[in-house]
Length: 574
Image (cartoon, rainbow, N blue to C red; front, side):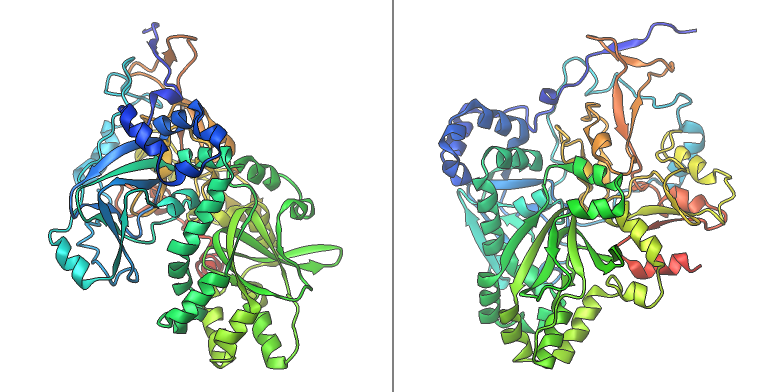
């Protein structure tokens, strides 16, 4: 019987810098250029700035034609151009470069033999880790492999035949996706041999904390670089996409607003534990029921609650996710009636939210005066589909259940695990299937808050705004590039527990890892067990999707995108 446990050195945040090398000459050049030369002087010359850059940034080089970021990939970092030239596509997504040309392919799945072999190859000990492999030794290294890069063979042809804009020394790109925890909105590739500074979003976050002027600078960059593209995707503005003058006016007059705190994930968890009426007091009010609209509100990132006064409190009607609108119907009704119509509902930010406000007078000028309101109304309703109060008006979703989803913040999920407890026989086939695909370690708990006969299980929901990522010091928890699943890099996870603490849904578990003898792996210094963060990865390497859902013999379990109310209502009605 083995009794001697395995000691290793506990990984610290400083052990996992973004790059193992950062020449002083490069640091000196960077501090004198681009956004850094406008920093608060007291911060600019401090060691704190250099520490942030050395921890969260790295120098990367790209050859002509190499793709730096792809439209649709999920972004975790931003880029400064140190030398050379890069090009940004300006065409609508999908009209510029084909998916094949971009090198996009489905994540590699296990083959049939590997799937079957899981039945006997899974390790018998729980949470086993091979501490002998690279990355587990005392000589920890954080050197990273960029992997296989994709490139265009005929760059001159692309520049000549497609609409692009060049970015040169000192310019920044990619920060919107990195800070917004969203997908890239454009493809960027190197025109000539280029040298870039890549900075993780954790570094951008720390810079914003140190100097508020950076936030204002980033908002201005959104207005100048990405707002036009964002507006092109708004359904009721579709007929204006070819009118550059109208788009220029919209970009010029739009207001960029932020609600809630970007880096305070704890507030989301605390609010979920409070009662609904007390909760509303802490949710930033964006628009109030009864006030007259002075703008149409477009949700840029985050989730918003739509509610109405009901007796002495408020009733939640629905929620709005990125790309949805609020206030358009009231403006349209007022235009048709010849008198102002007040907001019929209130809108509040759930956690952190960014929005674009389009002035009412501008909407009237560009849409109602130039186009029959009925047509624009159809487009707006189609854009919001049934994510508005239509879900309640048409009886698709019970009002109390809607209140439950919003109050508990489950509306943030893109793959929320719902279980119909009337169908569930407690056979635990879902748990066993999960364990069999994760080396005998289940990655969810078949328990959680219940409303009526519907349980929301303690499983990662792969949120639209994953607040679990906010305080990760090493970037170990991040989005997968292709589909945006939130995953954890077990090697760079230092076991600090920040992600688990910040998750409002108790979906991330800290586990004590073991060696091949089943003994705990302990830290050399304090002899405490080494811990790692674990959670559902949505079976990204398995065929057929989540094993838990596929294994349920009674169709009692489903992974639902809460932004798709039609699918949610259909499942509830089964």
